[in-house]
Length: 294
Image (cartoon, rainbow, N blue to C red; front, side):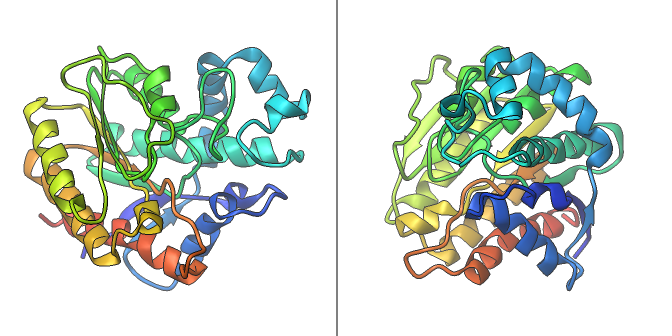
């Protein structure tokens, strides 16, 4: 097993609002400190760059609301109670992805991760579904600024990534979703895009079909993988989620694709504890540690 870098710092969990999206990265980072699967790296020196991209992508009224708390309806449109540390937290989750993009586009590393969540539902002018700033769109923009011409967003979160599709151009960013919940649905407008609704009975087959579709779509300068574990909340088994992660890692390795992954969704409740959730997200890290040796 070969280590790779995953980006995280304490700002990821700095908001007063305590919820899985704002806390699980800290629990996973602590777990990673006890094993050899990945190296946790502070992305803090990318904060200024990330804030600049957020200012470019999101509307000025919305960004100001998130940073000041006023008006509260806009500042809390993602579903969190606002506090002065919330903008720091939200920016940090995008910063981790920008750092990971830099890692794979400017070094010999082919894979890097960020312990980021709360990304793909955010729109230009508002948050939604526990997502404040759209870190996937931010990461894609950073990659384009660095010279990437073609990017794949592979979104296997339980929910659809309509926010990301609304904030990126299909001429530069191909988006392939497999979702178990129709929240934030979007309509593919390009032949290379796809959105599949799945469930426990067909999940692995649907993942395989999505990866085949991605393969037919050609090559990419970067793959942004939104590796949600919330299909578990829809009844998809841990075993199937492990198979999914192995499939994605093998697909990327076979094609020599540079990959940046994010944790994305995953929630306690319904018998899933925080320890269980950390173990689910660890599947992604383990799969891509193995991927670096392929």
